[in-house]
Image (cartoon, rainbow, N blue to C red):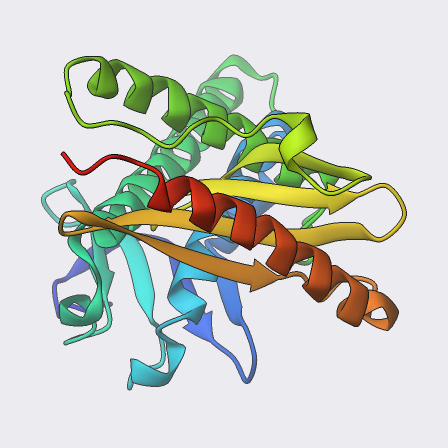
Length: 252
């Protein structure tokens, strides 16, 4: 068996496969049967973040898998994108994608090691039920929030050494009535998710560096499609607030 780079594989861990309107996560079946509940909870936001990123590049993929992760014959882990796809990524986005792929591999290898130890000790209970798919659930959203806060904390230390002015933090009074902002996670950059007390999840806004400027990207949630018009209007209002904040940052 070979990976996307054509290297010989010792242990297949996972691959991401393009579907018609989505990206599927295919996990080593044996590992899937041995997942611990807490490991699955840790995997879900990482897998979903990777799927969201890879979905943006799906049309540029010309192979059966868009990304895979495997243990090679030399026992090193290797993550690879579909040939030629990497050149289309922003460098930060690609690095964050690969970092999460490595985190996924570490979680899976930990499962293998712990289950092997259980077998040796005679405490292994046998295969577990396999989750049919990893979707956007409450666990994923909570995981995104935790990952987003972790990134914000790391970036706050970096900003302390930077003289560049930053965007003022959003306050509740800056937002439309009924809207709550929470930290979220996206490989492109700083991400905020927005929800409404009656309309549900509105969507997210991602801020990423582009040279000396900041690129703002808005994504409308398709949840509760009967309210898409109202949700879009509110998200546009939020975008205007953030855009005004970006305009007010003094030039460095």
